[in-house]
Image: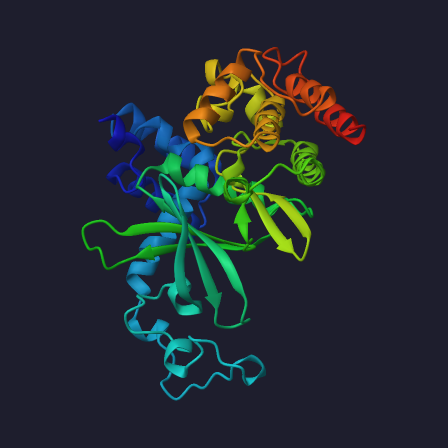
Length: 376
């Protein structure tokens, strides 16, 4: 029953969306009217009060648009005239620049993704998401496209919207670049339409995780350059009143140009607004446990210093060349108990221990980390 209460396509939720749209069309769309009717329906046990809160207004709009989409969609809406011609940029054809590929396929079901992008290749997966490397047929560039499957619960849509809205506000050399986002409805599944959100972003060469696996020796000069960029990215996130909450090597992306490594922080699926969420306590959702600060794992009362802690674990990894994952986890676990095996120099050791202090009040700030790194 609990799942049905929040079900994105529950009868209660759809009914409230239709009611709100009806009031809008009949020009009786005032908050008092809507709240009055909803409160009456709630008193009769017809609808749950959680579903008509203001925080779900954007989700109700999505439902209305989806229903209109079902009513108005025609195959011809998505298939251009067969005689339409598209000339590839600079006349240089890629493997998917033929006219048949540039035009919408009758099997794409109106998908913006399959219409505009080709050569899809999965380069990453998560619990509810996939990341593709995909070529844009229009601008002839290759992007990373994250597809988030919304599994039918309004809270998941709220989380997806929060991720993209935080990501879209960030513009910094050490943050993965955001380009666009959109929502798609797959109507081919008759029993329950599949809903996905897509995020178009900058494609980088590799993650810090893969880079560390591939290196054959530790270069402390390279480490310093890489880590400074990580800190600058995190500092920018904090300056915009966000907490990333999932800083880890797999979410740090590298673009390598000749001998220069450009570092960018990405994946804002766990990010939260500082001003709003801290006031009401942060959710108990966790990032990756290996990199999570003690207060993030144990409670919902914490601040942006959890990102500093996670970055400290990354620095520890950068300064060590672990042979196996088992060895890596063992040494990180010892570090979490203030035991460190490290021969890279006292200043590196001091920085690592200061960033991973279990007491957030004694833990270094991001500015202190940058200052100390500059002295190494």
